[in-house]
Image 1 (cartoon, one colour):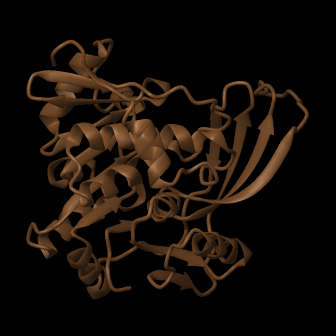
Image 2 (cartoon, rainbow, N blue to C red):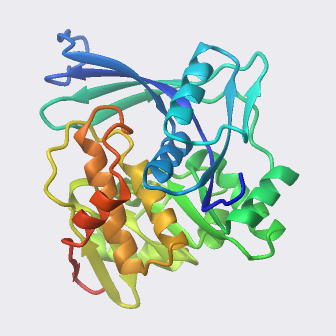
Length: 310
């Protein structure tokens, strides 16, 4: 691969998706409306999104040499993602996730399998890929790579971090990520202990813990980001969402590509909100990802507004 816009490092898995009209309570039985199989994982889906948007993406991850891994490789290739930098582990088991999608709301419930494949290590190939791309998107499974990557590149790369939940090494990535992007659910972490504070004050407290730019994704409410003492919001466009799987992954992907293209922060967040929202139009997290032209057309109609100051 000659030119690399973004290096994505992280998880790929196989998603088994079941669509139901109503989410069941425990010990209940409900009919299945629709089912499908799709490639998943934050890193894998983000890579597909960057490619669909027209970016050249290098995706580094690991898969097992099983049927699930072969399916994931096939789907990545169908989206135009180069599979050269994916290690297929002999005898390895590709992780799977079972996802229930509630048709009425598009909300999803995920039961995921912990990854038993070897951890991704910072070898010479990964260092060279990072140096060539300048922008690296790290998913939650490779939180531990933030500091070592920055050190190896001597500060010449920008790191976008997809924050899912509190995990080992989170304090380090808070310090080393140039763009720290959690969902609003992260603000409710017991480890943060923000209690019943309103969103603007929770954002202020988290922003004080983060060295880079903080951006918070918030589903139907779009995204929030502080600049100085102001808290901005970009609300999501009106889209009939049938499935929110992958929306966060696609937000991070679009944002990383916007950075590579030199788009300013306000416009980058608008583009990311547009891409994440449009990706919810189809089941599976990937089929609804727009091309860049459509995403830009939607993003141009979005406005940022200032909420309570942080």
